Image (cartoon, rainbow, N blue to C red):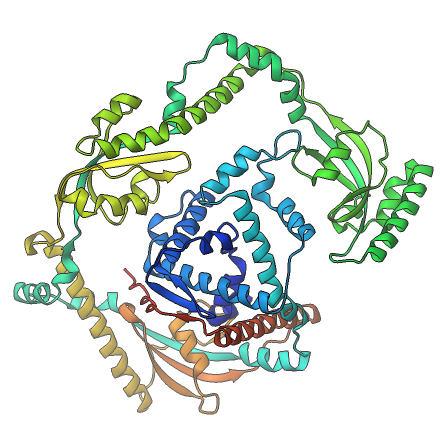
Length: 638
């Protein structure tokens, strides 16, 4: 039901989008303020400039983060003017909220920062089987964003402070049920309509353009028939997959790895099943409040230890974990890395049937009962050989990549007239591609990366046929390319595009005929002619459009309710034209109490979002936040 409302409240969606996207967690305030170089300002906040260089870096980092999260994402979307401008808007937003947090003395404590880092899924994925953080992998992850751990953690701390600026307003905002229903009644108001469509495709058979008309249309619209500039190129890819294939392992090393790690590998696969009772500690609780929860937990622990067989019964009555309490506290089987560390450490240190002491985590106090252990069978060397060889090859390839990346980059730069020296040194195959354009034909692969495409079409590459620099086109992947042939943009000859010219001309004329037919019928029906072509009566609303086109629905719902019955002519763009008769205005459809309560709750969320947006706009005005570059036009549909 509420999808319709969201479609009609763009300003709320825009605000929610800003809230949902963790814009700059991986950027860090220090990552921006460390730039002292001069640059053309693109925005100002509170007297401080945001330079073009900062904007470029912010967009580069955000694009890289999105590519890492969604490898199949079309790279062209990330490099569009609209995507770049959205990055600038988020950068301005970050600066506004940072300044406001400083003015309001909103500070993120070390404890709050630690809680956020522990709950971060990306960081949790970097834990080793023993639960400790893989520091090297952590540094590598951040280095891909151009950050150090200190910069990243400063950025997280800053973002948590920024959230506090709007958080109080969001949680305290509300609208009364009466006010909500006034708006919801109007929003869900229904219309009874009848529609006649005059579709352009139905008029196509009436259009037979002459050769002269085709030539005239081609001459007047030559920009529509441009062939984009394109290149033929050769390129080299240095990545882990390539290096892995070239790794030759020593049998003794494979055997030694098994002997040294067999126990650890088996332990890492072990799963445990536990039940727990959780007494939660509210976020921001005082020391006295926390002490009171601990005392309650100690009382429950004493009861459980006195009656271990009643653990499930006590969990149902006392546990404050809604997900497991109904199941007697049962959490099913889990492996290492699935639970918060204090809980995991306790569970994997217990014996089957044992009940733990109090375990404190960020959620509160836990009482655990280990109910089962699922140990994987010990596998022989031959059974594990394939896995071990894969791990060893990956490890060796990672070391080789770290050692080779700089040398590869230097070689393609120092010998710019050929990729052959780099190919021979690193035993890489030179690959080729033809008719490559600035808009990648495929959304994936090295040649889809916008940075590589930009380098390929730079004058140094197209005019002087020099190697591009080695560009990181994916995680642990460097690509260098060299243009072998360049073909500039040109207007395609008429004979080559005649069919396309005719198709466009027919579509244009068909749309005009459809509009003329629709307007003619509208005038006739208004004059009293019987509307035989009108469809059956439909009752439509924003949440129940009944399949009518959005333009028709918007026009019908926008009609003056005091003027019904009313006739409307509605343009459908290239699809044609429609004539609509609005016969009745009907009230909001009645619903059960649960549904109405849900709608009021949703309205309160929109109200809070609208108030937060208004407050943010006020902050922007107070801090004199200005974007100094023009917003790009909306893309033209193809």
